[in-house]
Length: 422
Image (cartoon, rainbow, N blue to C red; front, side):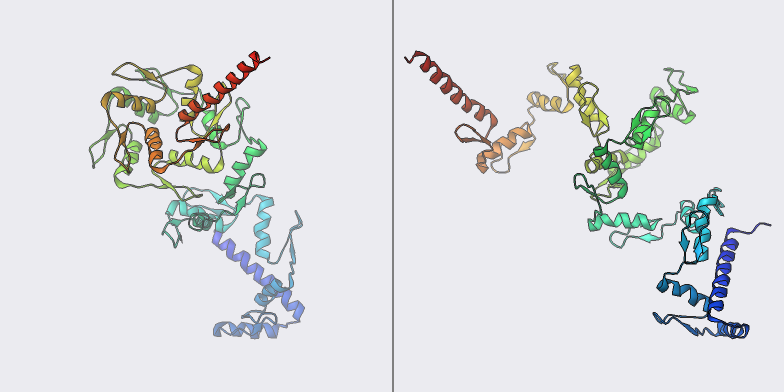
């Protein structure tokens, strides 16, 4: 029967100790009699071998020999493939697996194999759900120590990774790498279908859906095809109106279980998606993705008319209406049309008389936030708009425009007089 990975690990360590023991004994001229005496110390816990550099003591001379390499820098074990040297034999054995491709340690749950036992231990936490690393600030738990270190930067504000082009700093090295592509123009992700290249892997994944033509599951209602049967089942609920998933808080029903899970966060206040840069949390993963673009500067959505780029696909759709002239939002009172939903909402206040913006100084109410902002300047005395001709300042840009006509008219009058002056 083949040895288990644990047996192999023990045998490697035992072999290392034996060789280290042999090397040390040879150097120190230790006889078999002395080795027998050393063996007699083991049951008593006695540690007769002391390091003359730091005083640490050991039960076996081989362990002392291995320890002393910390002080001497001695690395007697060399890799015959690349020449790299190591102080311990078991570290060399692990290193050589890079060259041989050997993966000794196998997961008994899924069969995935690893070169190091520590990698197997970390992987198995996927199956067990174990999260041994705990944040002392907020109690959040993690499966990997590296994930905990990255998370703790939310609390400390540490951003150790800096861009040498613009100085912007990041909590994670991966975010720095993504950001630097703005400066370098690098696009490492290429589509194997059409050759188009992308700066970010997620954008490539989205793009590749264009090429996935195999959709064997066809909707008999509208003819739309799907790659998976489950997606067809979900789609058919659009036609049937079936909503099998109900919220036990408010009774609202949904066609998909994922929609229900997302909806329930309105009641629980749960925001499971956290930004590792600033700590802000979100109820939806897509909201986190959009938010993170503020930190990375990524703008993956480009207008094919003018080249302007956007961080959010919704902003691109809205922007494109400038080129197309599309106005999809219609007022049901007067028929007036708008390119933006917010413009329609503002317009409808003319009909319903709603004035949601209230001045906290005098109580006057306004239909638009911009009008409230202008009104506030009466109380604060703020005059942000200045004339570049005479320096006079105004609370509203419209007043400045009206004022500047005085200078324009005066200039015209002066020029007119010059025409008549001999």
